[in-house]
Length: 288
Length: 340
Image (cartoon, rainbow over all chains, first blue to last red; front, side, top):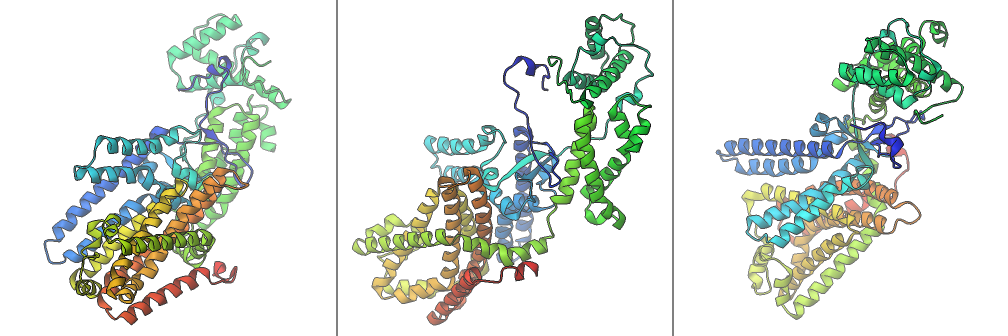
């Protein structure tokens, strides 16, 4: 949760996950970057799926291999494992959805940073880099460990290597992996929301009159916070907010918090919009 | 516009009038986009297909207007998400797999390889230098051989082996595991090719080391076979698959070098932009080497075991080499293939 009122007090703006993304029509879509946690989750899901398929297919092949077709089955296994390891991410991301099953599940999508179509070359580049980010050090470590050769130094080295690359995306503002860096891609959230109902239409016919002073209290940021409060509709929050506004505007408590706030919202919204029409956009309560 | 003016008396706030005027368009777009996301573009009727871009543009313009005139955050969020979903369905969708592959083989791959010619030359020089050094080292002191090569790889083909056993190793064939061997060689080499591409990120240094080591091994083997008078035989044994396999390794190494080079020396453009431009084209070339290595695996696993005639081996190798060279480097018409 972000705290809307923090911005005024702290000199540094909180880092927004939103990024400019201009469509050919010239509209900025303001894409939201995928969070580090979601990225890690998606990767883990993909890894688990790959492992499950590998194990399942190996068992099935081992079962079939009781006959005398071992050579053919061996070839299928070798090539299948290669495609599974290198093709899983690449083929899924080259598809129309731009996402592996894990990414789809967590609402992520790979997008070219320049707003152009995601090309095959970019997808291959971003996933080939995964080899040195994750698979190379860990498989090397696993190989050495299986032969009892992994000493502390090697373990630390391999884990540090992978660690640097794994956490690389937390150290830059666009949440880029090395692969994203080289391929010119980033991973964004795909969210789908229904259009929430219109607060104005549900507000009762105006009964209360708000004084000039009451309407001068707040700006756009506070209005939109009020919108959130009204949409969430929790009685305690409504009561708290209503009481604060009443106290500031010097209005009597008439016991109907919800109706009071709805009407105040409509009145404030209309007033701020009138201001915007003549070029006065009052961002928050501190602005004039 | 008239709807907005008419409704002005009814609703006190822009957002409500705006919703009333355009809500139907947004809902229709949402319905179309959802059905494309669920199934595919083919799920749409002809009228819907024609309506889709119009609805998309109408929604984009709604978004722009809403941002400037409305304070209803739920509305703006909804329009942003709907426009984004529609954008990906309209601009982000890939062409079919078949036409992507067609474009890759017709233009993308040879273009990418040709763009790497400078790096490819560097890699060839490093391989030759490595081979030369290893050859001289092993000739002067055979114990170098054991330092350069792991025991498993040499497989008895070391300086202590007799000429007869060496000759046998060149012509022996293990008929029953041919295809498996080919598959194993392919996936092993392809993985190494992907590594040498990815390792290029570290300024290309690990890639150069890999390439140099590859050259050293090559030279060390020559130093074993040449003194026993088997130089030409070994060359033919190597040529049948080696022209394809080594070429693929050169290209994969060159792709790695290209990325490292772009990051180290970006020139006039920003480092990140240089890395992206290099990464995308080098990745295309690298994907091609996987195809080449599949061919090399077949030649090595099956071709070399069944063809034991030196001349024929050399001929196949040279034919493959000239085929690849012609495919990659012969100039071709600019647009003829792109349109096909």
